[in-house]
Length: 420
Image (tube, rainbow, N blue to C red):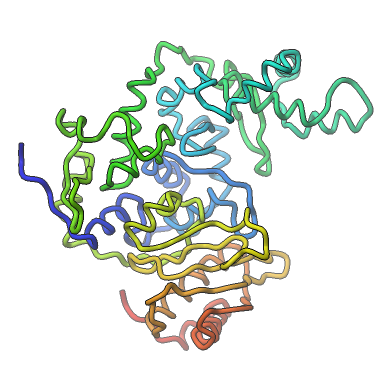
């Protein structure tokens, strides 16, 4: 067996940032093909509908691509370059990976609560009637059933029909044909993918192995306990274990500073690992709470020393940082969190709460990087002004707001930016 690769923790962080496309800022303006490539490199793009800033999938893409046309994501879905299914959670996934996830549709009971199997057994007629409606009338939104009820009649009731659509979606009998203003439009899978043959589907065992390999590829380098989370096929004990795959030559063992047991990497990342000492993170940006860098809270804590929880589901009185708190990435470190809200009509990007992480010292360089990143996000939302309600370091917050307002007013000439 060849000598095990060795990485410092700084290098391990840099490798993961590079693999997740967060090492350096993008220089060229993104096009539609770049959106698809970005999703293909991540493997999955988690969906969430909270819209206080941009909805999560759009924000995840922006963190990597900078300004782009958000309509491209829905266009790629309608063009069948992407499909939606349960991957990490509900995700946009490259259509080439349909075979990878198809086994979940064929065995919906294994999906647990997501399958809705108990509800299906109790309401078999609802599923059949929804299928008949799709066959006779074509693609439909859940809201269309609701509208029909409001027009006075029939058996249609919103909740059971929405439930039926979701059960059929998990079973793979219907797919999301497109989205309209982010609302799902459902259609029969046979119409969305007319050439699909279940003989192309990976078996459960083959898919599980592929999940581990792909998680290693996406993360750059990872300890075993992190690998089952990426495609949510197991918890902290990955199956198959990456040590077995390493013995087969399918993965590489990596020794990371301070770790007794090996971490693992995909052979396709060998050149990146060998160059790890030369990787210098320069990207500063705002992250979605559902960004793959932080969606595994334990991984974010262990690798980046960032103890993060999203608080939108926490009662307001118990929140520490805010409703939709965005991690702040600055040149390879998670340096703070920002509870932000884009007031699009008023053109104001509100910094409702800004918290620096313990041990992060305010500086002119930190202010420059954060002001640039926040201003870019605000401008992407069409905001030309900013406000600040609270900052854990009040003096830093005031100076950051001033720099941010100058950037949004187009007065960067008055700022002294440090070169990267």
